[in-house]
Image (cartoon, rainbow, N blue to C red):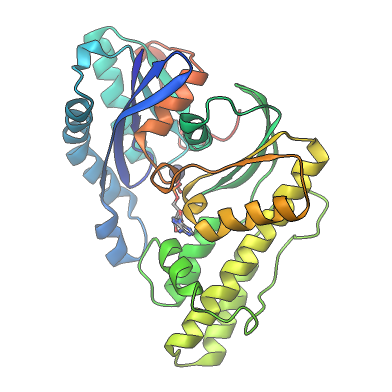
Length: 336
Ligand code: KG4
Ligand code: ZN
């Protein structure tokens, strides 16, 4: 069985063909076009511009995904598409394209929640992840903790009250003069930073709930940047280190507390911020130090950020086809 997964919720136009062979999922292609360079110049995404770029890229990206997978569109079994959350103009490009393909080719559509798509990137290489699984989605728009009891059976434990973790990386990066998205640049610079020079606040780290808050951290970094005046290279690296340490400390402490309290068998990390190797290493180290009986998963870097294969993977495990008449983009979609 082969599914084409399409992802257009933000600034990336992505399509990937995933094949299921017995229990294994095989990526036959995973193609991406991005309007990121346009947004880097403006320091963030302009929705209208992102949508226009999606329209330009969608058919070439699908064509390339089919060519690389060496399948014809007729040989596909279904189309999976992100229907929310995201920017409405961007979402509509993927959704309306898939509706048309389904109408013409008479093939089923599987609508996918973008956030669940991120989680399912973990199943591509690990089809036997055991439940209950504590899942953390850390992206540009979300910092959410979920308890998965089975495929399609999940409970939202907590989320961000203000800025998401990726948003914090991006906003702090902007203060330091980095282009959007700033996460990778901060991670790189933090490696040269002194961990003791700046200790930034860890919001909600000890609270009883599973919520996150990162806007106070951004404000603390802003105050430090203003206090320092002209920033030399070492100070930038030290601020990157201090800010990244604060984000990682809060995320790992809260997620591991939730893992202990829920007796989870697996801990799965996902979303663009999961591409941060320092974060993955911190989780692995803390789990080993505390001798926790939990298996930790994080997708390979290219499957952490938005892509089509993860959308197809979510569709395989949550196969609920709808007809084209019943598909609507939902920019405000959360976890239902
Ligand atoms: O999941 P994603 O591709 O898009 C959304 O659904 O939001 O995540 C993008 C976010 C951006 O905020 C970006 O700065 C962050 O992921 N990111 C990182 C790293 N790579 C991407 N954050 C920290 N360290 C990284 N290496
Ligand atoms: Zn995403």
